[in-house]
Length: 376
Image 1 (cartoon, helix red, strand yellow):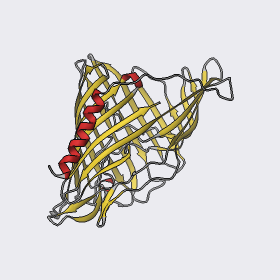
Image 2 (cartoon, rainbow, N blue to C red):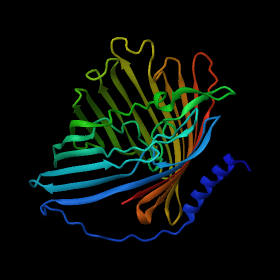
Image 3 (cartoon, rainbow, N blue to C red):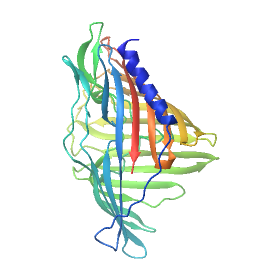
Image 4 (cartoon, rainbow, N blue to C red):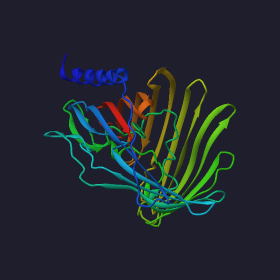
């Protein structure tokens, strides 16, 4: 057996061992905060992953932080201002990530550590019982997460078409020359405006629908409508967003799109997402950036550990950075909930392909992920 097959077998064996292993109980501890008039909850997660990558010329097993749901620590504050208004706050930080940008170079594999202590959230909110919620500070824009409606329950393993190989370059031809093109610059699922310094308003829910709008420190603004509820006996969730980017971009005017997911009581579900951008001052030079995806899953209780979810996803991105370039991604995966400790593990296989109008022979990239998210 060659080294490549040994590595693939090792990742699969590790996942099976984790599924079969007994789980220890959890301990309780009290944390006292300095202000007894508000409640304080401390939480977070540790995200670790083994990722085997083969670009057609190089192959390597990388031991890294989770690529889409890394290690983080959060402090949640809540208190009653009046009978109708609750004041809340959240501080959440990313810890420095190891091997966060693994890739291959002409000299071999490369893996770099992040040394920065990142800020994900730092905001205060005021929520009225009947009038909605106002948030001020660093947090999600109104449109963040709008493209990611799913019942795949994949523990944050996948959120778009490049989640496992964002820094890996495609190789070309039988010689395997590095192309300089990475998944990060060839795929986009147009998921809103992420986290920023915002003034955000969220409406109360009406018959399952809710509205959100935010203004960003950059001058950009966005709005989104979401739905979560039951329709004809099916669980349904989804949303649509519009984001104006003209204030901070010389080439992009706006971005819009959405997603939806439907789940049957049997455990079967389907999902889809779609999004695109429009240009400013002919900044795309003929490009029409577009991204979409479809997928499905089946969830069942196969053991006392928790729900097991089997899922497949397909993503396609077009004209993201170069006119005529098309990136396609196929995933098949298994997620296992660990109910007794509120955590999860994932085993995922991904295949990534790239085409252009000149007929360049880009080698497909294969990746296998075994990931553990340990929440606390």
